Length: 227
Image (cartoon, rainbow, N blue to C red; front, top):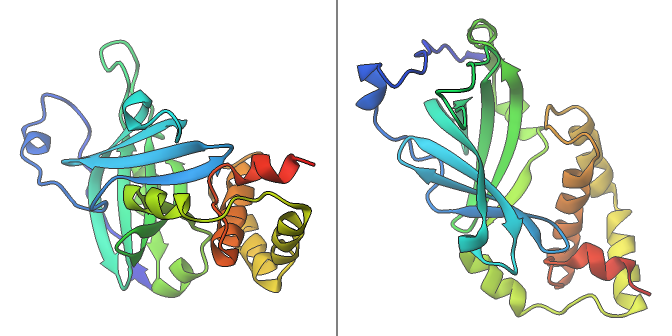
């Protein structure tokens, strides 16, 4: 068992240590998770901060609005995983009180140059709760990860066939009934991923099904609903 011990710095624009902290590169490039019907969540690292945006793949990155920002306090490398302790920053620091449970623990799985897995190991944590957190590689390997793709993947997806016929839809349905998906569902049920309606889970397995079968995952959920 590897104990992750962190001496967290309290966020303040007046704290000189934060001003000189070095960026921790957990994201080498912007990456996006495709939710459905062309919707996406995009993560991009700027220095020591990760910006989370939501939008639609058809509008382009310039149309995305910044929803959340996270300051990276620490990163620990465990095999192919980066375990990061992050702090959600207030959108309006001068007007919003700082919440004690503003910290989270992320796991980033390095898949290849254009893909990574992302999940939340702990959400809404206080500094005190973080001091007792423990993790090991075997535990990380059994987490449920959402697959984020680099912008170059969009060009590859555009070359893939759309879901257009009943036969296409049946192939997707058959893939979703595989034992592999049941194992993913078990991992998902034991995860701390903030996904109250299960939309991220369905999007992840649908994306995997489409890519495995050679279909474009962008907008796939809408195509499945068409008769």
